[in-house]
Image (tube, rainbow, N blue to C red; front, side, top):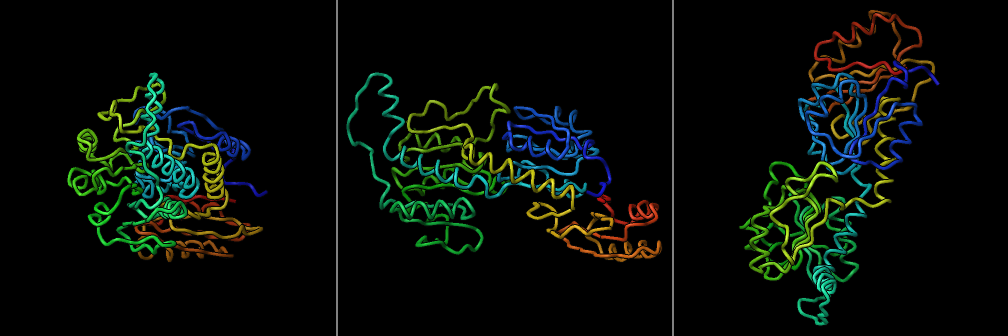
Length: 408
């Protein structure tokens, strides 16, 4: 193994939000120092901790703000052990040469299964009847009890989760409609509708699978609830800001909706010791769960392996396969060479200036790869084994340079 630009024993990893043990084991096996926190940290706490951290692992509760990033003097990568990355200031990470990796597929099946389970629970009033039995009440009847077969589900957001939900719902005999702002091809017999209004008007069940971007805040509010069928149900296992909570409460209490299942909330506790509070508490035809859509042993183990593998590969080789905010480059390790990673603003002439400097030191380039993404340029240069170390200082001085790393 060739020596890296710094010893692995000096790479400090901070893992928050009770990540699967496999993530800790992966990083420790690589020789990194790993520190674990069961819950999330707020901005102030994270700023205190992050100064000497090279790799940060989080889930959805921890917010990586501009202030946090500016306090991170050694941060190379952030791992989001979940699907969404809205909690991370991706642009500021890019501008500081910090690569962000997530797990876009690892918990898809877990979320889909619990959504189907909640649809059945709501259509059969299982939670209501269970609570009544705990109170000694025997209510053997079929009031508000329905099969899911032949029901129409409207899926909003036809990405990884939405499309797999579509497949399983169709296999259970449901009719599937979907709406997505992007042009997504249907799978099976799912039917794409042209407007949100059409989907809401025709669906017995509405399931949300969109990101939590600012433009999607209160995506479902009073106007949308008015469009929905009488006795329809709403499922939200995506992001907490998507549904107007007060409007949802109103349409549950006035019995416009048969019920709802909500797993995500605008404000969630940072850890399990913090008390949960919501206007939705106490509504009988509502199933609440503590953001556990992807919280299965299988999903967390998959994520715990996938994200560390991507980060370790990035640290060791510079590969950015499936990186959220960097251009994607994946290339083999060159033997008997050194590898420079140059992260820069996407401006004309940077590569030319890099090569002028390398040439001025009479260094032979064995391989070079450039790719850009929006505002960021990413160059990997493999050079001959022997070189004048002062070239590193010169490369750091190239206009528009964000970060330079020497790998081996």
